[in-house]
Image (cartoon, rainbow, N blue to C red; front, side, top):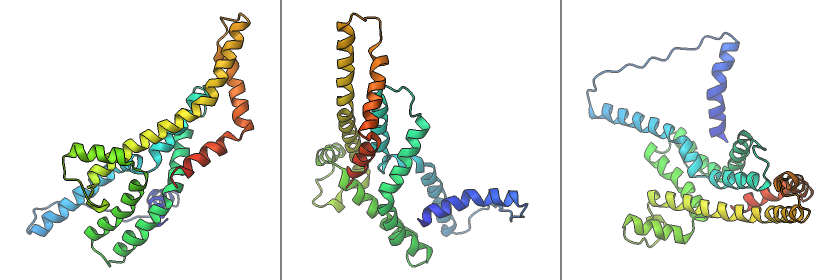
Length: 246
């Protein structure tokens, strides 16, 4: 929770200061020749931090529940045949907030085990990264299939690990991503089935009536929307997605 507060403060404080005409201190960056190895280490740390911030969107998409959620919701829209309804912004926004809810226990562990001790100067930066990595790995291991994990272990050509801690993170991440894709496509297939039946029934009726030129999608769309509303489709779909991470 503190991580989200810090992020919101970063964006809101400049806007509030501008609205209230408050004077904020200037920040100057001075570059000079390093006189000791410690100076070079600090520069490298800054570069690594900027690199991590650059890759933050990819980390959010690929190492969390976002991938599965957004793919399933996209399949739902296509199976309904509603074109751009709901629009991409709504699907991405809903997927983002659902991912925040699903990943909340993991973020809380990271905050309590890594962020808070580091901010209190109880642990070093290296130890903080190691502690923050553990909850993420636990989440990914819980959603990764053994088949995909064995595939990437064989592709990496490393000795077969005996325990989970021996699995490198660079092997676990692609295994997790492919597992998420497989799960999302299976859920998408199950979503397609009832709506495909409606399309087939409408197409058969129109053909029997001799209405060859009338697009079946034009007739089936209202029936699919009616069915989706009557069965509380959004509750069922969202509930299934969230419970699939249990």
